[in-house]
Image (cartoon, rainbow, N blue to C red; front, side):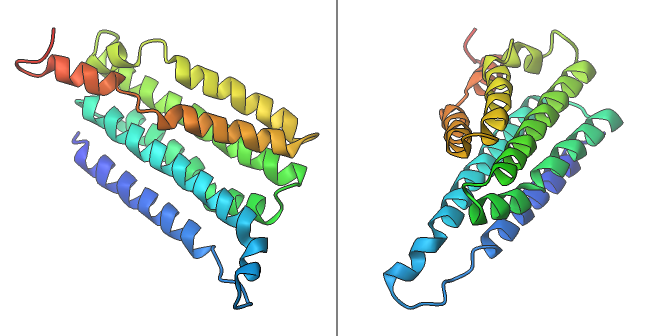
Length: 198
């Protein structure tokens, strides 16, 4: 089965998610700079969510570059990931409108956690198809960043019920961890290419 349709469909869904998020940004009723002040939490939540979507798109691209074949299980694992990513506009809007509230902060973290779990399932499903000695398996390795992210999301979800600002800080921290380019897959692909490093 070709992976090109999987890539095209995923790119289209991610583009729609970003479009929906930006359409949630409403201009203020006023005409001076002070009218923007109430929108700061909404804008900040948009920027954080946009960064997360960009991180997922980037990592998804690299994941599929290392993938040689897909099957039905990979397709469903990919749909599972897109399900949780598609909820980003909803939780982004809610946490942006209620930045100090526990439930929106916790739900934002739950969606982040479930998207991370879905990505973990997708990468492991691809590895199961390609084999434990595949290029992707070598590139992913122990996936310390992925495991650390899951732990931090759980801490943030717990913190949401007492100090939502701490939870928001953890969500930003995880995004910053992933904004640092993760070149494991790129290095593995380069090494496997003809004339690549050994």
